[in-house]
Length: 134
Image 1 (spheres, rainbow, N blue to C red):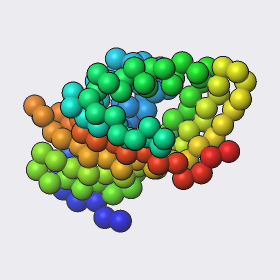
Image 2 (tube, rainbow, N blue to C red):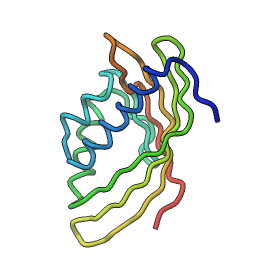
Image 3 (cartoon, rainbow, N blue to C red):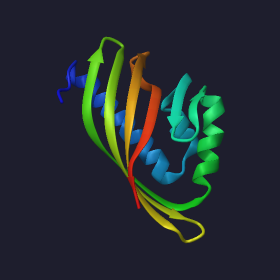
């Protein structure tokens, strides 16, 4: 597991993921959406590929409405930067408190493609898989 590419780009990608996680924990739809390219793809188990930020932001907002609390923490795998494109792996710990009182803990994995536009990194594609759930 080796990361490669300019350190400043890898740091900016880490900050992108941190921005994403922060928006999840604050239930902030606009901040969450701002991390994605307009033509991005988000893939979830059972939902498959959702293409276009305008198509999947409402899905995220609906899913988040079921929770009173979400703890969302990432641990980096390799980040490989090649010019204005990059690929990364993240392991995610989720602590979910549903409004109906059910509490769940999920460990997941994101496989990401990023694109740099105007000096800023964005998600071009995120593919999520569940590794373990309780």
